[in-house]
Length: 82
Image (cartoon, rainbow, N blue to C red; front, side, top):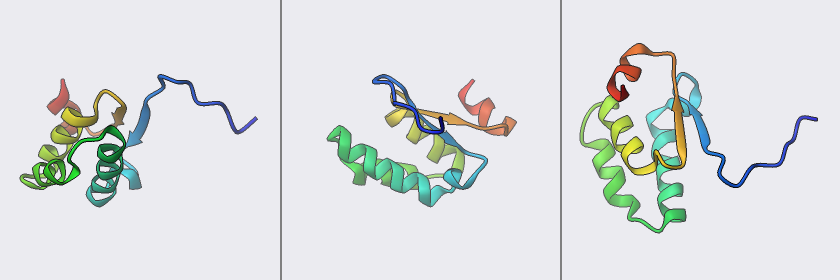
């Protein structure tokens, strides 16, 4: 079967090496998640834009790491979070 029931506590997985890793896609995801969580998306997006791509990932992780798993094979990105 290709469709499965999503578990209640299952996290969202984002492949940073694919199209979902594009900064603009991450901005969109952050905006939607902030809305769902009832937090100010504008300040989060501004923080994400305040630096380079690694800063964007850090801010995203800080705000949504409890519900999102960022996946990558890029060692530079992995070094930031380890």
